[in-house]
Amino acid sequence: MCGIVGYIGSQDACPFLLTGLQRLEYRGYDSAGIATLRPTEGIRITKTAGRVVELAAAVKQTNMVGPVGIGHTRWATHGAATRENAHPHMGGNSLLTLAHNGVIENYES
Image 1 (cartoon, one colour):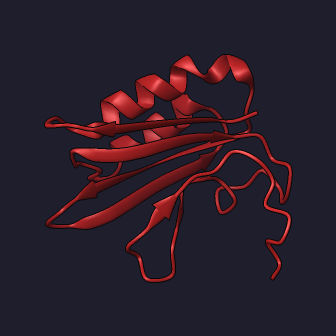
Image 2 (image 1 turned 60 degrees about the horizontal axis):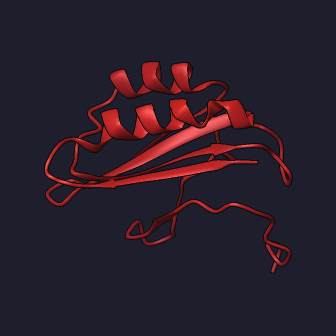
């Protein structure tokens, strides 16, 4: 089971995303991540293998600000519980970030 939260507003998204992910911890997970968008700086992503408290510590080390964001907690079904496999994922052109809940059957193609 995973959890997905999002924020669009006039304030910094990070506090809302981290609080939302903390409220979803009861579902169980092995990794977590958030992405924020600041129009002048683009998308920034921070991900961790482990708990939301570890994600919050990692976010403090970055300059993740912006009024738009998405957060995700992941329970590994395909791939190991690693930072690289944690969501959100960024598209190859760095213009799209996504998180999903479920199994993508044709991920190799």
